Image 1: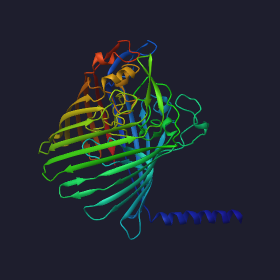
Image 2: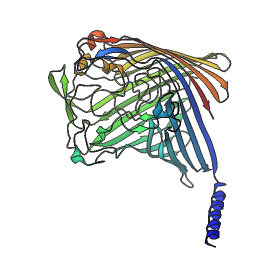
Image 3: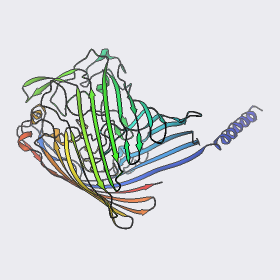
Image 4: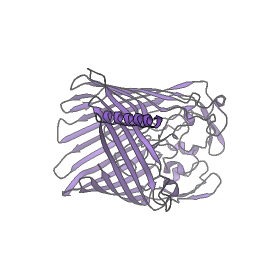
Length: 512
């Protein structure tokens, strides 16, 4: 009898669940990416480290890999829905840890990229999204230099009329990651795990839309605990580590540990004004202005040329302007783009003058940037991760979406990159590797006013089927880094060998 009652109860629960499920519309979408890339992503062929050892570029010339994303929406109505977004990847073929090697098909890592709830307050136009979600701050002309990534938070939006809206945001990208030690593994903050290590950001945006004119002024205020800085740049998301470029070291400085601070929390502030003008269609004009400030949270000693000590500040503030002008024609869209960002002034005592950011994703170009599929199998020195344009200026020409054959499009770009950082900053850096990689500063290459890069992009996309695209990208970077400037780094001993960078990658993208 007990067994019969148990079976009946289980059947009732199953029937109830099935009945409730009929009111929910489940919608699935996703993408499969398969990539094959060859090239040389490093701008540095070899250099000497602090011990006098010669370090060579050892990146693979060819890689193959894949990435899978699956999104499931549970839609109750236009007023209520839930979304979960899974990712499997990036898997490079042959790496055992990623389940892509022979006999290693059980090691795939499935990550939750997004998981959020959308709902509308009854009888109002106030909409909420809460949970782990993609957050991109308003931007124009070249993508967001401040924040374009995944973070947990709450977004509230309200549309007053067809011209005016308002969005409020709270997100917490960091909390409970501190393990009680500083960056050098020494006890810090009384050794309390997860103590004063949260970062909270609050933003307001005001979308304004008129005939041919769109602008969205926005501001963001933030606070970070004094132990937050020991986790910046190391918090994993489905897209990789959030690339914080906040208080802390300059890129690859020969510095000692970041000192203690009596402040429990430090303040952060950003503001932006993106504007799009399409009233003269087919002429399109975009420009964007950004400013950011992060309060100093401790000082540190920096070794100058291996001998002298300088006391450095972890404060960081800077600005950026960028613009795009393009004219749409029947065969394609020619355009010109450019940007200018503040750079370091040569003194470590007053902090950094480069724009701080959370997770930038600049997309003017596709080699030193995110201007294509934002994914590939070739290592490019970290340039296409968290690009913020900080400490650089540039100008470029593009011919976008050229099409002479049905279902086949081409985009060609040429861009010159210059630096706005003082050449005297080099004497605080370990070696020439400092300008070669974004791994230290999360901004892209560190360029002084004596340095330059010339980038070429050719992106070709062919629509094989409605849901299947072949994307072939070719890129080349002419390396014009100034040799005499970088010979003065702390341990470089006058030796490094630079090289041009190039890549060729083919990606097959299936989306549904």
